Length: 216
Ligand code: 5GP
Image 1 (cartoon, rainbow, N blue to C red):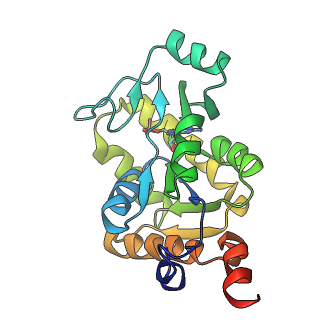
Image 2 (image 1 turned 135 degrees about the vertical axis):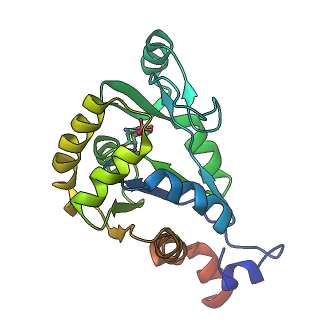
């Protein structure tokens, strides 16, 4: 909520729907860390925990990093139209819960999503007012180093992710903002700025409130 909006609090305060903020990046760009940092750095922002059929990596927790489900459970949710989008990424299924998005945004809280480019393209159709952010590492070499440092994936998986990354990067033009994640501190500041600017967009303002307050 910006200053003008919070001033009206309790007195016909402007109503704003939560903003949809979509972050995509090739794996290894550091997007997960960045998104996690954001929920601490920015208030009024909730991270959307995806459903996946991928096995948890060491240290990952069900209900915190992902909701880890079986393929049968996932496909049941697909049939019941519980996903706002879903996609097959690196041979696993990933999906965003539609009910969670709706509840959170209807309640006025912004939602941050970490989805692949297929998911981002589907969400753009469904939420044209969303803010679409692309994160890149400073170079292809850094991307490879980061994939290797993760150590949690098998070498063939790392090679495959590296090849897929190149294809994903071809879609950079579909996004509104680019963040280069070289130093995490700077990338956090950049993403924070994008979120704060997104909140102030005129398309996102409560136009009825402006009319009532100033144009009556
Ligand atoms: P990872 O397995 O490394 O956690 O994620 C692999 C890829 O899946 C990443 O590009 C990540 O953004 C994407 N991803 C995670 N959750 C979702 C989701 O709900 N929907 C889609 N389409 N992609 C997702």
